[in-house]
Amino acid sequence: MSDAIKHECGIAQVRLLKPLEYYKEKYGTAFYGVNKMYLLMEKQHNRGQDGAGFASIKLNVQPGERYISRVRSNQAQPIQDIFEQINQRINDEMKEHPEYADDIALQKRKIPYLGELFLGHVRYGTFGKNSIESVHPFLRQNNWMHRNLIVAGNFNMTNVNQLFNNLVELGQHPKEKADTVTIMEKIGHFLDSEVRKLYKKLKKEGYTKQQASPHIAEQLNVAKILKKSSKDWDGGYAMAGLMGHGDSFVLRDPAGIRPCYYYKDDEVVVVASERPVIQTVFNLNFEDIKELDPGHAIITKKNGDVSITKIIEPLERKACSFERIYFSRGSDAEIYKERKMLGRLLMPEVLKAINYDTINTVFSFIPNTAETSFYGMVEAAQDELNRQKNEAILTEKENLTDERLQEILAHRLRTEKIAIKDVKLRTFITEDSSRDDLVAHVYDVTYGVIKEEDNLVIIDDSIVRGTTLKKSIIKMMDRLNPKQIVVVSSAPQIRYPDCYGIDMARLEDLVAFRAALELLKEQDNYQLVEEVYKKCKEQLNLKDKDVQNFVKEIYDPFTDEQISAKISDLLSEPTVKADVKVIYQSVDNLHKACPKNLGDWYFTGDYPTPGGNRVVNRAYINFFEGNKDRAY
Ligand SMILES: NC(=O)CC[C@H](N)C(=O)O
Image (cartoon, rainbow, N blue to C red; front, side):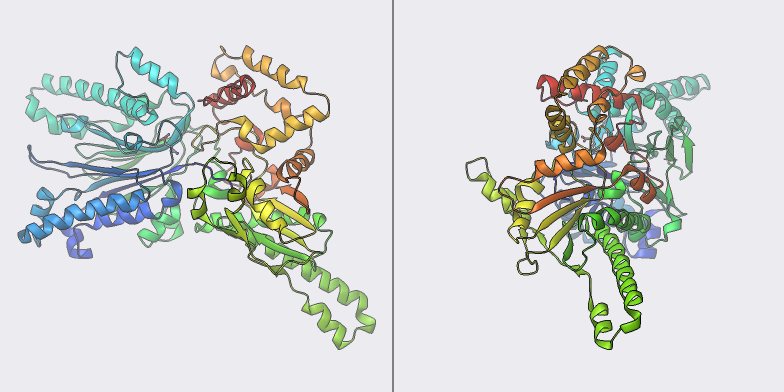
């Protein structure tokens, strides 16, 4: 991926169902859970590098003993940082107290981070700042065990401001406007009232306050709390939480926008944002791991009972297709196939662009995530080459010499590693006059493999803003003097902002939107821009469910090809000598390649929740008024 987009987050939750001695016995360490958490988080580092956090809970401790530990970091290598801190503490304790070595009960009482219940998070922020206070998990403390709440999520709510105001209306005074705090306080509010109700009931039954506590923990209806809390949430989410006494949950949004997978046996319950992560860390088969159904929660009670419960009536399933195109690790068996198919399905258009001249064409990809779709594209190109060879052999079969046959067969597909990412270069680049020249060097190229008569076909996962393509990649590739540069996007044109966890909230940043505006200008139809603005303004006070996406009208006058052609213009600077052509995946082909993840609002403008239309409406108003605010 050439555009740096902030996106996603990853969650990891582990509950050990047996006593810690069991893991010491079977796996040689009582720190089994901590170790697994490290792996689960590290293998999801792709999902978030702004920050990382870890929390653990010990079950059944005595009053006066600590049972919740948490560590967070927003350092450059946040996962490494938190686990270094955890290791340091553990090692110090073990060194100072040799008597802990074989005494698991003592270890549990004395050593932080050791416990039965864990929650981890890797963050790319979509809301608020990148301060340490914004790093998950968030903690809501209380002296009653069952009122402690720890929350982390991969989410974005379109109506977080409204949810914040709801809390204020409830009489609360949130100390900050972080979206995770708002969500946590909502759950906390219903947790408190559920606890109060249970206490009243138990009191009537004759229990004292102290006697009531364990019964409250036991009878706490987590599903009911989640139902009440999530009633007004509009967004994409996989929200994970722990309660001080030991219950835990993960709730997935009703359209299944954000991903969530789980595994359970009699030793562990594991939940994570990606399937292959669980598969690798626990050495499991693909089929062992289940996807959490949209609108459902996986709830594990302190006593180890696990249930999958419907919390919200599911909407039409619209799982985010960007997870398949780019975010998730391509090591998932399904995702790997899907990415290859994305590359393959683009081939007919590529062949047209290179005029079927497979001899004078070099195929390549933008590192690193586009590599898999590149393999798919190459396989399809290979098929084409074989077809061409067959055809040549059949037409010439009457007078085919051995020499000529060798010549036909010798024709190989030319695949090369052309673009090289020099990641570190970004750090030195500041705002000064030589900036563009420096930026051009963020990517480097391989010299000596392109001839002047060559087409250079290069695939990327998607093109969001196109800035790096324009400022670096295309300029650098042009230094190799190809005849034509064909940039292929495995995703369709990104036309609308996301509001469910990917940080692309501003319309004018999207190169497809800028292309449509250019076309409107060229066709003397620019007044449409103001007409759409007026329509958007008129919707400002409507209920979310009544808001329509009028931004579609900006694209309506044009075919996909017209917009792609304009994007090609926008991406090639006047100094670029080669012809530049950009080819995008069609939405139909995207769905063919990724049949289970049909969420496509950023390409089509069809938002799966009512709040999406409000966000795109607001994003357009912001664009028109030159307002740099976020649309949610
Ligand atoms: N990408 C995400 O899921 C972000 C989670 C949350 N909205 C935050 O900003 O911290």
